[in-house]
Image (cartoon, rainbow, N blue to C red; front, side):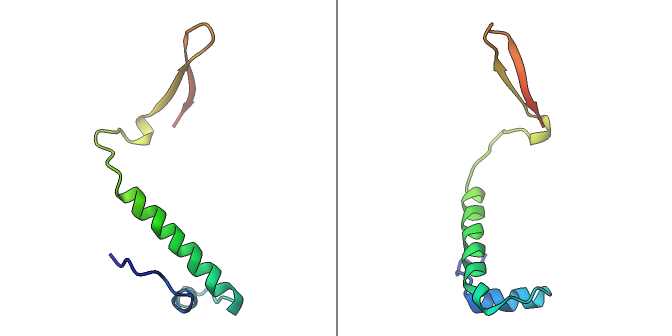
Amino acid sequence: MNTAELTPQEAARGALRAGLPLEDDRHEAVAATANHIHSVIATLRELDFGDTPPAMAYTARTADAAGQEAVDAAV
């Protein structure tokens, strides 16, 4: 995996190849955003989820004021 940061010029070339030409004043902001996203994804890839079930099997539960289990959300 390439760990080098994306330069504004590389961001402009990549956007152009994707059919999304950027104005000159957007190159730096796009590169910074892409670099931030890359750093977040890199951090997420380091997490060990072990035996965590997939989200489709997860149901959030809490207890209500009477101590009864209540479903807050289901995915």
